Length: 93
Image 1 (tube, one colour):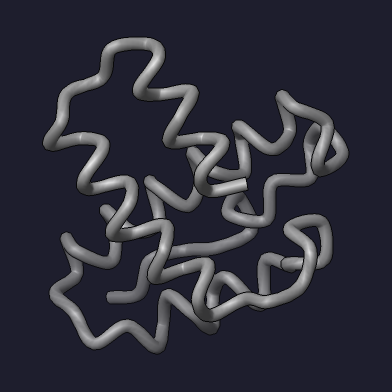
Image 2 (cartoon, helix red, strand yellow; image 1 turned 90 degrees about the vertical axis):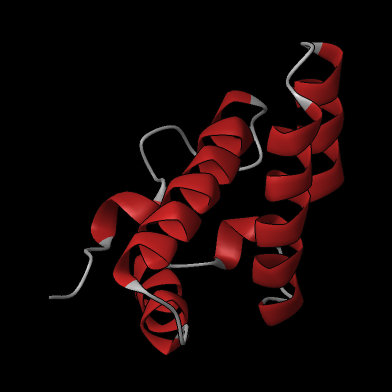
């Protein structure tokens, strides 16, 4: 799923820097989840975000990129439309 998104973004002429950022963040996320993308819950994503040892802006950036992955998954039929688990997460204080 991650590679499919990156390939789609590359075909749409996104910048090299953006593609590198996607690759870094999404591979880190994917390494934490070995199950099918449709089995990842908002609680799973929230725990993962909470476990990042990073500055708040960095966590926000991860959340945004992971949200992009799930939006892409919705559009491709990998998850049910309206079931993006990132929408069930929040950023801590």
